[in-house]
Image 1 (cartoon, helix red, strand yellow):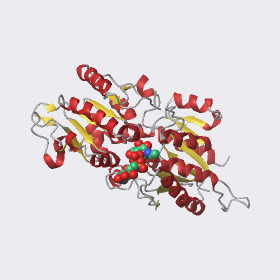
Image 2 (cartoon, helix red, strand yellow; image 1 turned 120 degrees about the vertical axis):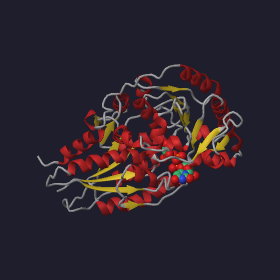
Image 3 (cartoon, protein in one colour; image 1 turned 45 degrees about the horizontal axis):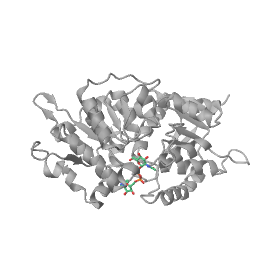
Length: 400
Ligand code: UD1
């Protein structure tokens, strides 16, 4: 019987990771084996705005989801509960061999729990079965349990049957937590699979022209900023202090800020608009008389990849961007006190500064004056992680 994999996506970073999985499944199926992998894609609807979701499906050429749960935004508990409630019948109806979840968002943990609590009464004998659970990007730990993502990671890893890891530290974390070695597979990074696959296509993006970042002498020096983690944006004092630092930086080079909807809402609610110029409404010029952070809407995958690739520095609190800048060789200043991705500090261009404005400005000064560091790829960040994952699953489900 053909292997049936049901993959879950919910939030923006999930789409990027699942794109690699879809590609790997397509690749295997195109070899023409009699037993084709049956892939079902479920979108929980955690992210639903067109620039947070649809544009990623287009850019990444993702297949249309087979099922959309339409959960939308709510508090963490309500959002998680809604996903669980709606996902249960999906598992019962689809009866997949494997439920595959990625990353650390609420959709990941919610669907992981449901997968392992749902008894499927299929045509596999009277006893029925519980699907196997595969977690892609398992074992990452920031050791900061105030982060919802950390709880989502721990919960998901606890109940997973296949734990696919991106870096050695993740294997060590899982072993320390008592996960048997036989369940852990060090396969590399699917987010990097997608980056490498789309890197040349992203160069066709016109985002640098659109943002007037191409001068007569080539690309201007600019910084890219992303910010959305609750500890950085939920408290007005903290957010204002961070924005003060960026305002300072924007006196030296343009700071482009594709704002996440939750951050944009905070800026509006707290009346912090004076820090910004809305690039597409007010225009970027003149530089000298109106120095502000340049606010733009959330960008699609290809535009953002191109923007990030040409940046002098990226300032962020995102997890995935720490990894992407590592491969791009672009300096990354992370506005957090911890990272669950230590390989980006050891091998990459990443440095942690927290939310202290002085540290942010000091680190920016250091990066701005120094030459770019060369990029050194962590092991298995080579474009083949998803193929390794699918191979493990196919081999495990193949008849002897
Ligand atoms: C989620 C993930 C985070 C990930 C981020 C990437 C969790 C716990 N967090 O955070 O790990 O880094 O996605 O973007 O799952 N909103 C919209 N439109 C959308 C989506 C969200 O306006 O399409 C707004 C809503 O006001 C919502 C808020 O953003 O309440 C938060 O969205 P949510 O998905 O709950 O968490 P994120 O902050 O996006």
